[in-house]
Image (cartoon, rainbow, N blue to C red; front, side):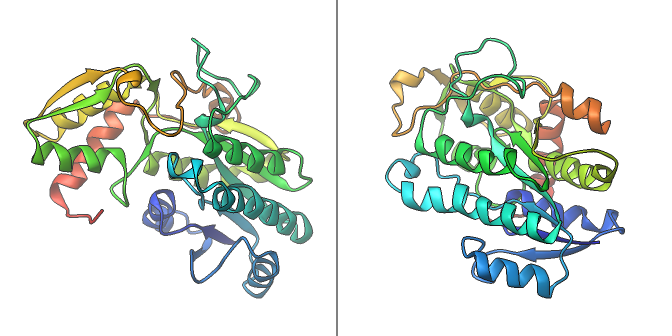
Amino acid sequence: MKVLITGSNGQLGSEIKALASEYTNFEFVYSDLPELDICKKNLLTQFVIENNIKGIVNCAAYTAVDKAEKDGVLAELVNAKAVENLVAVAENQHLKLIHISTDYVFDGTSHIPYSEKMPVSPLGVYGKTKRAGELQVIYSASNSILIRTSWLYSIYGNNFVKTMLRLGAERESLGVICDQVGTPTYARDLAQACLEILSKSERLDTQGKVYHFSNEGAASWYDFAKSIMIMGEVDCQVNPIESKDYPTPAARPHYSVLNKSKIKADFGIQIPYWGDSLCDCIDILKTEKFEE
């Protein structure tokens, strides 16, 4: 089975590449800009047909949360219009589709982990465009799955873990937000979950189904940063600050922990604790040099 990985140069796509050799039942085809622009439906359709694609994992997204407030047109194009194209191709060519979304579709007013049935209410342009993309999947007739995740990091690309390690080595102290709580998620764990679901989804009716996946547990950005410094053996003082003392163009949910009961029940997926996965990631970063 040939599977197209869109946005393959990003964190999640790169982690899927790293795990690909473990899934010999799939032949992976990797794409990113400029080779394939999924915002152009005709080009996407042609690519899928010519390469005999039978499944797609969409890792492509516009994720610059603050920049999206002024760059809404591009965010809408990548996060919604491109997803509309992928859904249409999946329907017409009878493909499997896994699309990745975000905890930022929630407004953060809950005090219990968000289940898939709880109402969404995104606060900023990024969350609103991701929600628009979600609706394309939810109301499609394709064999498609939507997976929401949160606070993604990896050994690849730009992310909070690598930024903290770099800044921690440069500065004596850092202030980090303590009143926004979610779950750090190792992109490798999400990649493995996507590949496991792809392997098992033939046995399930997955049309437009929504699932949540993050690592287990919860933390504030401050907790996350403290753990990064400790595990990375970086001598930098991390100080807690409130959101009001660090204003950003886009509002963030104050609480966005995800309930993972559904994905564990349907697919039998084992999910690691966030601290254990962070330790694994930092161990790799200590021994191998990855460029930001």
